[in-house]
Amino acid sequence: MTPPLRGLTVLGGLLAIWQGVVWATGAPPYILPGPGAVAAALHAEAPRLLPHAAVTALEIVLGLGIGTGLGALAALVMASARPARRWLLPVLVVSQAVPVFALAPLLVLWLGYGLASKVAMAVLIIFFPVTAAFLDGLRRTEPGWIDLARTMGATRGAVLRHVRLPAALPALASGLRVATAVAPIGAVVGEWVGASRGLGYLMLHANARMQVDLMFAALAILAVFSVGLYFAVDRLLRRALPWQPDSHPDMD
Amino acid sequence: MNAPVPSPSVRVRVDRLSLGARPLFENLRMTLPGGRWTCLLGPSGVGKSTLLRLIAGLDRGRGADIAAEDGEPLAGRVAYMAQRDLLLPWLSARDNVTLGFRLRGGPVDAATRGQADRLLARVGLDGQGDAAPGTLSGGMRQRVALARTLMEDRPVVLMDEPFASLDAITRLRLQDLAADLLTGRTVLLVTHDPLEALRLGHDLRVLSGRPAALGPPLHPPGDPPRQADDRRLLALQADLLARLAEAAS
Picture 1 (cartoon, one colour):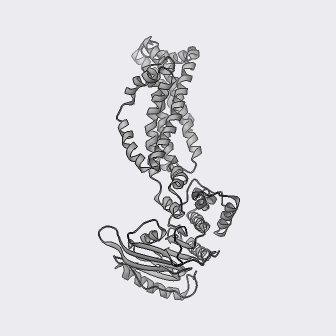
Picture 2 (cartoon, each protein chain N blue to C red; picture 1 turned 120 degrees about the horizontal axis):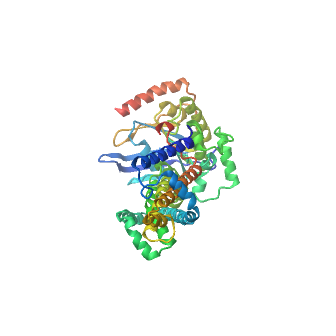
Picture 3 (tube, chains in turn green, cyan; picture 1 turned 135 degrees about the horizontal axis):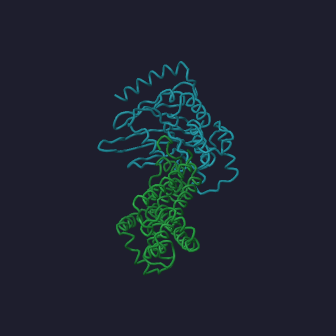
């Protein structure tokens, strides 16, 4: 069975279980609508859903870009200067003890109801996995490569640029995959706390009015977008790093 | 390919170097004769690689003094080749060969790339400049590493078991190739293989004990690379094995 076919089979199975639960419990549509009702809502409410989806997608993509850029930069600074690492790394680790979701109301207060607070939320969530993974990669360079570069008369900067940085790209890619998976959470949580647009806002709005089918429709769009984004990023990274082999097929 | 300038002798003096409680080296004196191959043998852990790394400037020992006998500093005149090929997997074979130029910030121009391709051809990899290291066999990768060492064009070449991970036939071929291409350079070859040392070395030294001391040099007859089936080598091999067995006891 090919992977796309397998994916479709799993999706079909899950939809069947969903419909089965609806039938078995006899739940009213304002508690748990069936897949058919959600599909109908998706179709009927599409003109309303799509603008909100576009806003959320923009927040996620912007957050992912900015968060990855800042995270990679922070890792590079820490890898190139030991004092920077000594001072910044503890700050970074402690910052992870603060639940980012608790900051969401504050971000909305500071940055307003618009795009900025949601992007900031996504950036905060993305920053740490990217920095941690990339810094780890930068610090685990094959020692033999560094020895070789030193005998060739390379400066520290040249070793970082030509050896350590490219060698750490697979680690950065792992961090980026994690970041891609968590970025939508940041955007949606930001929208829950305070927004006038976006799928998160729409879901909260629909929930309050018992429009559960609309809420599920928004959720479905978010899920499809997140999964699509993840596979797009994964594919891009594989293409960009062809020398980084996957694990042995037998180990899967 | 002969060295453009005469390769200097290298004088090594280590007053004291400790790893753990007991000194590894104490009052160690060694000279690598200029333009000749010195092979260093000895049991594992005796400090052969440490000595090579000291000369390469990779480790610093207190009271270690490494000097070229022509009075010029040794820094920038040493090329290093390890047991593993250390090819960067994201660069092509050609870009790996020219790695030193890139690391020193110089432009890698057409002439440099052409030279890299000629060296790849000399080590038997004609037309493989664009190949990714991951697509090459172990022997081919080590050939690229040899080409990279030659590209550096340094009068002093330090090799740490460069052929140890290769199969017997590939090893013999690469030994001949290296002996040919590095003629006239001051070479230090650390090896576990007595036959390799006998084939390639002008001077063979056995390092043993703790603190480590060097045995008297052994000079095999004739010019390297010597044939593996040379009867005189086989006789010397018995002598060398006896010395190594004594060193390991």
